[in-house]
Amino acid sequence: MPATEPVRLGRKRALPSCPNPLFLKWLTELRDEAKEKGLKIQYTYQKAINSLNKYPLPLKNAKEAKILQNFGDGICKILDEKLQRYYRENGADASIHALPKGAPPPGRSDNNIILAPSKKKNAAGDQRKDGGGDGGRKKKREYVPQRRSGGYAVLLTLYKETQVPGSKGYMFKMELQTEAQHLCDKSFTVPDLGSKYTAWSSVSTLIQKNLLIKTHNPARYSLTEGGLALAERLASVEQTNTDGDREEVRSELEVTEEDDNVVDLTGSDEGEEEEEENRIHPTERRAAITQVSCNVDDVRSSGKPQNSQATTTSRKPNAECLLPGTYEIMLCVDFIETTGGSHHRKQELVKELQRNGVNFDIRKLNVGDFLWVAREKVAPVAGQLRAPVGRELVLDYIVERKRMDDLCGSIIDGRFREQKFRLKRCGLRKPIYLVEECGSAASHLSLPETTLQQAIVNTQVVDGFFVKRVQDVRESAAYLTIMTRFLTKLYQNRTLICRSRELEGDGGSDEEERGLPSCSLMSFAEFNHGAVKNKCQTVREVFARQLMQISGLSGDKAAAILEHYSTPHSLLTAYEQCTSEAEKEKLLSSIRYGKLKRNLGPALSRTVYQLYCTQGALT
Image 1 (cartoon, one colour):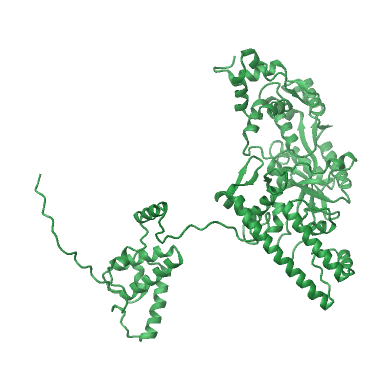
Image 2 (cartoon, rainbow, N blue to C red; image 1 turned 90 degrees about the horizontal axis):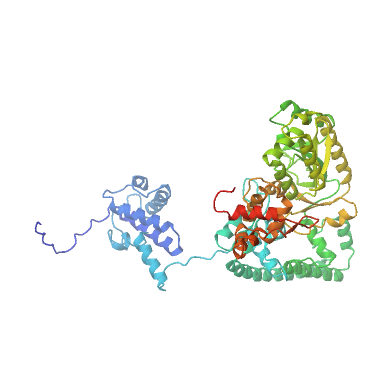
């Protein structure tokens, strides 16, 4: 090995001075100022300082510094402004290459090392933080949503839901949006002009900050421990603000009494109520408004409305309802019924509906072929090309149209049972099967005509669907026309209320018992979104679809099994706990299903056991 060279000891060579000390001084001041404010731009200034220290030539102005690394338009503009100010104060002939007094010497460590965002420094800072040392580091600020923002309203609404005795501890999306809207200035459903975001967009931020949990399908939203603590603090602040607002209302009332001018503070828009309020004596009026504020506070704290007319009046503008005369009944046709296949036959349906004067709209329906909506009448707005989109509520009638050849094909490939299962779960109470018999065409299909007729009868008797038989497309159009006119008359002079399919107890059962149509209806957007065929499914839903692939295992039988064993894991666990092979085969035989509560039977029980517990191929 060659001999190692002796180590030279001595002083470090002095670094050359910066030829642009004035620019260096200004950048240092900008960096230090950004550091005091905790701004991340301090690192950009530090990189510019490092580049300036390495540049050996003098600069005449800041524009020439653009050739240096980390010198952008923003930094050059700031330096130019400072340079012009320097010339005004010291004269146009003032030198910018002389080191001003008080400036740190170029090449010193405080210009090169301080605030350099290197990994070593960050690691050292993390070690000091873990070790409990201060180190002058800025602590990470806690996320707190702005008052009356989307996140603020969602946290408060979920918190108030948890304070209600016997609450379920979570809320669905539609329910949460409705209850939180009065706490937010922006809409949860309609984006602002020129923006694609709504107040609901802040929910993703709450989930990222681990303040909110989203589970199940349909989605359920609940607070985490951190979210509950933050919401509790927000609720206390909101209560303080509410008390302050109430004092302002009282002071305004006292001023109005002195001026003998009664102002309606309840926010009612109806003229009769305003006249009645104007006849109230000022003393009685103060008591009435105090009662309103108390009732509103009770609603916010308990989550349930009190039995007070004032509370009903204050919450009326927030109710999503369509009053009589403000909507029209319209038939919705799935676009598949007008395109593809036999184009001439499908266009004949559209022409027949147009000839009959039916108000219809062609759109994509995720389940069913025809349905009816109550669409809000919206007047066009001056200066806008299109009228605003009106609200749409889905009536409880949905039609699945089947030709005999289509019925035969759907039975063979399994679509027939799946479509009936999805129609049952779509949330509409009155499904209709429209069967086009098409004369003697059924005798030339792959399945016997008796099998097809038996499938139609089972759809009516077993599944509870209303079956309407027609001969051709013209009769189908005639039936849809009559139904449209019937529903228009049926829902005439009735107030329709928007409900969510996720909520239990929609309030429509009492009306149906009296022979009246249900006026508690889903919005079309929620209905169509909930009926998506290939949406994200839960384990329970996939397990149900697996069971229904077994021959003879209908939707009712699968639902009965799911009541006892909701997942494959729970079923396999139950099989493991059985002591003998015979007990495993008969595990599901005594499960009752359907309205008649019949037993599932040993044959199906044995088939399910073999499917999930046989190690090799099934024989």
